[in-house]
Image (cartoon, rainbow, N blue to C red; front, side, top):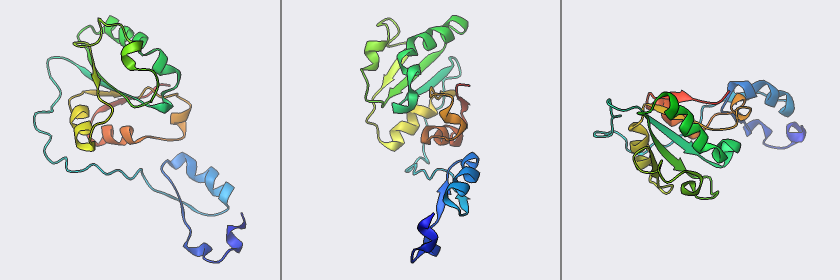
Length: 168
């Protein structure tokens, strides 16, 4: 609140990447908050040829990171639940959480044809090439967090025209 008393305060702006945050932040900061969607650098993705999703088999891209929370520990249950209703689904799973190896959390018989583990250290273009091969992007984050924020993966999936699934 003391920002209004400081020199140069007229050159300080606050932004939020979610419209839900604008009003509470405005009250907290006692100033106008500007809406600015997540800035995202996609690199040169003009040519994603050969990365179209396989029309014969549904593909789900799952991005696991530090915000995934408890869902990460139950990822096998999530995969098996989907497979029980749709046995032909394939998963592309990228884990950048820094937690225990995803291969240790999944049964060996799932890894390979059903679940493809994507290397975490991809270039931005390679990351988008993998995501482009999917039909659905599953964002296995804690549902409370998604009431107030979004993510880069969310923006990327939307930009690629994917169906986005978030927990509720």
